[in-house]
Image 1 (cartoon, helix red, strand yellow):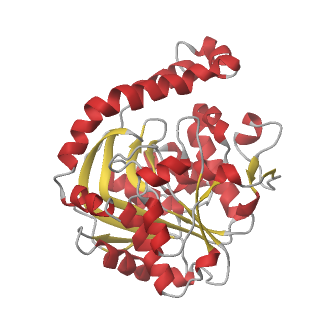
Image 2 (cartoon, rainbow, N blue to C red):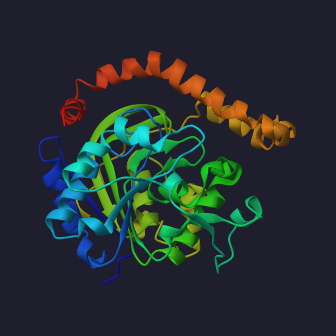
Length: 362
């Protein structure tokens, strides 16, 4: 059976979401994708150390996947949940704030910050578009990734650098080290590189995407969350990102990284050529629009805009420490306590906000 170009989609609710994640995985026939006898990385998605709706992997998403795999007999010692650090996120604090840790513990699973594992320079056989130029000294990846299956747990949301973000972008946080922000200037080409790299590294890839609450606007953090009650799964990262983009209201092939991946045969990006299993999405259009946060706007101004003459000194010298500091001040000290808290209060009254509060009691 051809696993490419097939995306399973299910409409769910906060009562049945765990059972629906099982239905979703069975619909995509996940047992034909994953080998129960091989070590498998579970790549979580942390876009903010703090919890914000649609920003990072949801606790019910983590539980829905973990519960299904463990109950079906996947050895817990072969499942390795991981996440990495960025200059503005902390994986250990993020795993606690997003309530992953109690869920993982419930199913006998640990959590591995990628800052604690060995990284090695890997010489990729296929020519990459940009990453070899960005990291001329060699591309370092986690040694544990080599030859391992991987399960990605992204969410449906917009992104100021890449229009949308999903399964492909989730690999950005695992395959590149903390300094991966250097890749922002060529984001779409880098995402293509990441698909090329994954095809070489992983014998199997499964993406399980949460769209119960989706993020609109200035993603991946300062967004407006919308309850959409949709979950998706696919062995084709390009196809699932294409369908997520279509659901959000974008033309997937107008998004450079999806189009380039499709043209290079890295997956199916043309939604007319993707088989949808389950829920009929033909009537769905979220009407989302990508915006840029103050931080991403400033970043792009320095890397590609009118201030690019300052890029080297501002972003590629010891003075670069100002950038994460500015990001933390804006996101954590200004936006989150004011605008963000108001959004969270409103969200807490929704079915998903109430479910999150139940997870806080784990």
